[in-house]
Image (cartoon, rainbow, N blue to C red; front, side):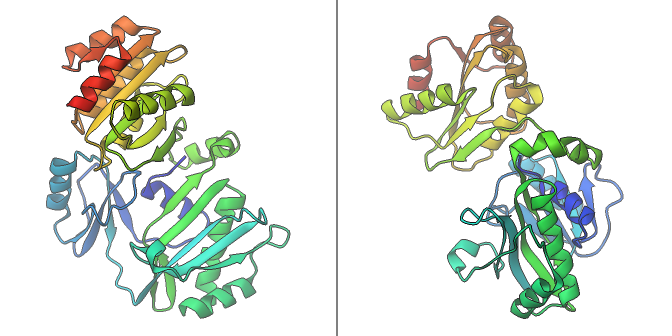
Length: 340
């Protein structure tokens, strides 16, 4: 389960990693003054490249611009942190040793292209020690005490909270202090049984996990069940289209989960149209329909929907009443989508 930036920073503060002062919007009232950073709270990457992170002295106007242009409804307004240098620092499980591993490199929006990432495995048998921080602090010229807090915090997120990735990019260095300007935390789905209640107690929304893989095409694909989703992708390919993703909402998806899943696909700038192929067993088609309608109120792109199974007629009625065409025949739906 991928966390929003503000949720990741809740965990950062919990484990001792310093973050900028911030306010979550809405509500939009009582915002701080001066130079601020407005960040759209979405789960997709590349926000900086898409103009969804802006430095401003007028956060209200900036938020309204993003709302109007992108249909985004949640923002983090943070104090601007002047800094001398910025780095990339993450912790994840090393596939070879099955032990936590840090990755350290130059920060920025093109980390992968920059290269020069240094890795360091720290076995759980001993955990993070201060000499680890001394070693890393020499690489990024910061106080070892400040770096120790960051390393220990990221490590704890992986070991204690079941994070499959805990990442800071950029980690700002100012007056030899280390401050996390961004967060990327992905909790391993199987760990939610163990840590889900803890996350909820911290104010973090624990959602039903979706299987989502981004691809290179322009047709968004949503299904429930891996087999149905993959079969839908195959039909799109056979009809001459190119899938932009694989997204399996799983069984029993409710209105909120469908809305969030739909928005994940709709907000991908590569996606020109979306095909949703749902078979309602434990999943209720009316819940799916309400989730689709909710998502389209925020981001409106052409959608092609087929519902079959539990509460099918009610789901179709909800969609038609909101101007969404519904299909009985899958091939007809795929054909119309590709020709549109």
